[in-house]
Amino acid sequence: MAFKKHSRQYDLVVFGATGYTGQLTAEHIATSLPTDLKWAVAGRSESKLQTLVADCQKLNPDRVPPGIEIANLDDESQLEALVKKSFIVITTVGPYCLYGEPIFRLCAETGTHYLDCTGEAPWVARMIKKYEDTAKKSGAILLPQAGIESAPPDIVTWAMAQHLRKALDAPTKDAIVTIHKLNSKPSGGTLATVLVHFEHFPLKEVIAATKPFAMSPIPHTSGAKPPTSLLQSILGVTSLPNLGVVTTSLAGKTDLAVVTRTWGLLHEIPSRKKEFYGPRFTWTEYFKARNWFHGMTVHFALAIGSLLLVFVPPFRGLVRRFVYQPGEGVSREDMEKEEVEYRGTASPDVESNPTKKQAFCRAWFHGGLYKLTGVFLAEGALTILEDDLDLGGGSFTPACLGQGYIDRLNDAGFKVEVRTVEG
Image (cartoon, rainbow, N blue to C red; front, top):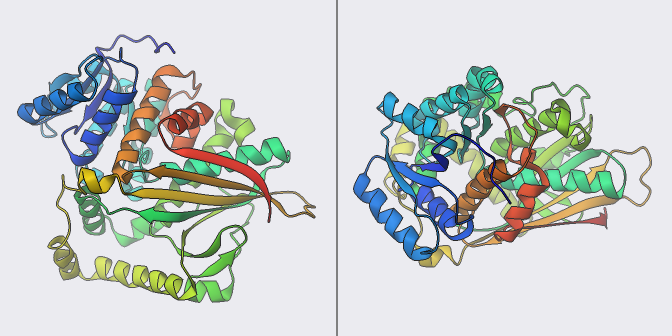
């Protein structure tokens, strides 16, 4: 498929390419994206970038090697020059609340398309508030939270909603996504972000940014809420048809912000209105528990751990001593043993559903989660580069890239299957 025509030197630049996630993103580009891609790796250390380029050439000698661009976050002129050279920028430099705004702002101002892998919902809310109008004027497609947080649940939800439209000719009412299987360890960058997150953002801002539909461009006025029982509210555990025993998800609030923004965007974007989930849409994410006791243990551990991280600074210092440092992560050998699987159900919003039919989705990937983040970022960039998305400019979500994106992810190893089941 032909690339979009543009006047930039590069189709794509990976900024922060020598970091843990940046390297994995560059490797996926080297091995899997079209060989005529004009791309570059960017960062502070020329020697590290040269080593990365040599490694990429070993992985795929037949492709055009990436250029090397030196750019320091402290040098505004270097960053601006870098952004203006590229049609799309992928940045993996975090924590984004400390280092992300200059690149986000410059992309919005210059009409450069942008992807990142942050999980910092309050930071994303700030960026949307500050630069949404600027991006709309420049035509920049900005895609924050396009990695393991929060692309998978966003894509799973979109796929189930489109299935209900096609199979049952119905909008979506209650959608539920579960992290059904997770065999992985967080990288040093992710852990650093979590710890900085609680120091950088006031608790009030965190709560506001992670409320349902907080980042939606339109309000959710139906009053519909996910069904929960009193027992579940206390213990954090419930049992769901087709999903089993589930409990509180660590990523639930972060992913909620993205999925409910998608809901509003699909209503507002002229080319996406037929994909709108429906006016009474609700969404919840859970983590699959082995049994009720395990589920309660997870729920209370997350609650207590969150309180300690927020209100006890010495606890954050203690955690820092026993985790990976930024730039570190699991070994390549261990990464190949990792896997993740998501499952979800979505109920049609119809007055009569006597058979209790639901959409059921299963999505999975064998390999490291940060390798998967590299896949999401690179394939998302390729989708922007090749597809006629008809989005205009602004801050979007992974699901806004549509079926072409899901097809590319499927080819890259992130499998998504949807079917109709009895609820």
